[in-house]
Image (tube, rainbow, N blue to C red; front, side, top):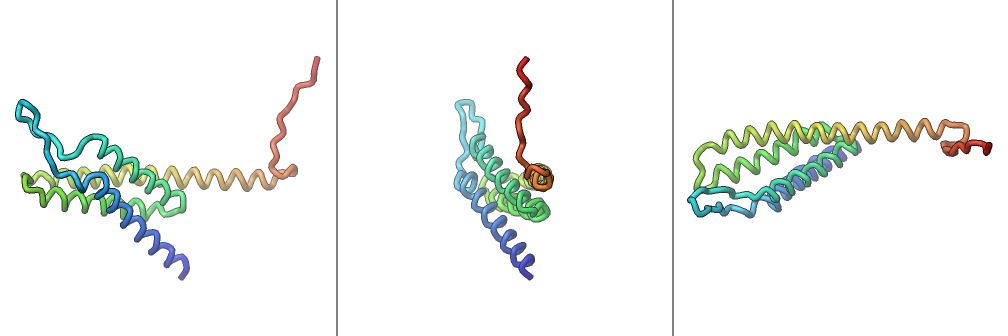
Length: 151
C-alpha cells in the first residue's frame, strides 16, 4: 500500500513538474519573429528549447535515480507532447503541421527520457553494489594507498 501511494505521488509530481516546465520555458512565448526578408521564425528561441530539455533531463534523471524509470518514460513524454500539441493546435497561425511536430516531440522525448532515466538508475545501482562490496571488505572498505619502499 505504501509503495502504491509513493508511486502515485511520484506520478503526480512528474506530471505537474513537466507541465510547469513546459509552461515556464515555452508556454508564454507565442510571438513569431519576422526578419527583414519576411521570413518567419519561432515562436521559440533555441535557448528556450535547450532550457526545457535540460530541465526535463534533470527530472528524468531524478525519476530514474529513485527507480521510477517506467513512470518517467511514460508520463513525461505524454505530458510534454500533450502540452506541445495543445499549444500548437490552438495557435492562430496553425497550418495543421503541428501533428507532425507532436509525433516528433513524442518520439524524441520518449527516447531521450528513457535513456536518461535508465542511465541514472544504472549509476545508482552500480554505486549501491560498490558500497556493498566495500562494506564486506575486511578493512571496512577503507582503501589504503600503496607506498613503494624507498630504494
